[in-house]
Length: 103
Image (cartoon, rainbow, N blue to C red; front, top):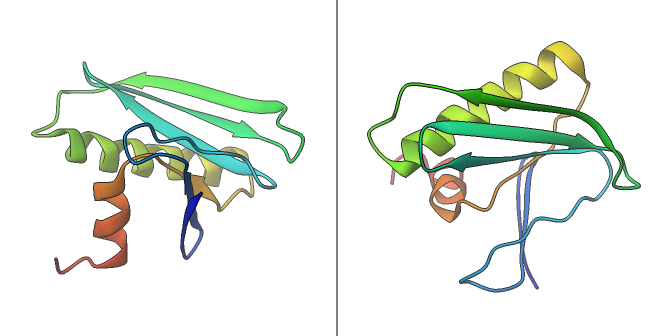
């Protein structure tokens, strides 16, 4: 199993083709849909859903732009509703961008 830890961004990946994220403690998961929608789920350490949200937004220039918008929105929600500071994503491009913003 691959594992990346970037500050508080935590991602687990079983297969390069099919990414999966698992919960370790409280974690806010996010993902985007093809048509400018996104959602997040806040789960406790037992995998029980505590909060969830979905949102539509104006279509972004690329899938990566949508992933960045989804992460920003999930972070804003966690600031309002939770003390969660761990975020998981299956977007390898977003992870690479956070690791090296100059790239």
